Structures are given as C-alpha cells and as structure tokens.
Length: 161
Image (cartoon, rainbow, N blue to C red):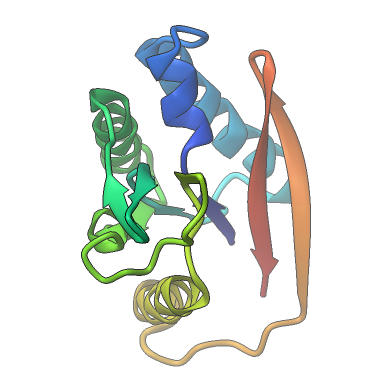
C-alpha cells in the first residue's frame, strides 16, 4: 500500500513556474507507476490531498495559498479518479488553518501533531474500509522512500502492511 502525502513543495514548483500542472500530473503518475513496478501492478495507492500554505501574523497562522495549491489538489483528485486502485484518502488538509493545526513558523507549511494524528487516524480508517472491509491488518514495517521526478526530489511515506 502506498500513501502519498505532500504539502507545499508541489504547489510551490507550480507557483514559481519551475513545473507546469501537466508536469506535476505526469510526475505523480510516474511515482505511482514506480511503486507498482516494484511492489506489483495492483498496489493500492492512497493520497492525502495537499494542504494550504500561509504566514504567521500576530502569532496566528493565516492561510495565504495561491491557485497552485488548489491546482495540485485538483490534479491529485483527477489522478485518483482516472487511475485504478488510486484513492483520495484524506481531503480536509485545507481546514487545518481554521483548526489552528499549522506550526507557527515564518512560512507556515508544516502541520502540528494533532493534524498528523487526524490524518493518520482518517487514512487508517479509510484504508481498512476500502482494503480490508473494516478489519485493519497488523503493520509489519514502515519505510520512507525518496523518489525522483523532474528536477526535484519528492518524498513519500511508504507504509507496508
């Protein structure tokens, strides 16, 4: 099972014109294909939609996302819709500013632990429902892989059950 979670890097590449939307889509499709080439063609792949970005203003994280964030989210949904065994497992990353689940950093792109807990819980429930009819498997290992696409390194968390 592959779980793809990526926050700002993809949107930033599009926003700064270092990557087009079509290039991002092709890169995402290549990542899925590379995992499936190594782990089998029917490998389920689960996407956590890209969140928003922002800044800290008077001690409060404020969303300042551009259209690029929404473009990445749209592409992730398109790939899931049009690729067999690819699912969007979590969509609510765009609500994390409202929930104060963003770290108070100069540029706010990182989630707080409660946000990661919510993602983990929600993805696990989604996967167990889709993959295992409500009976989640016991995990055997967790690995982190770095896969290369275009000029940038894309980091993906790989959970193996």
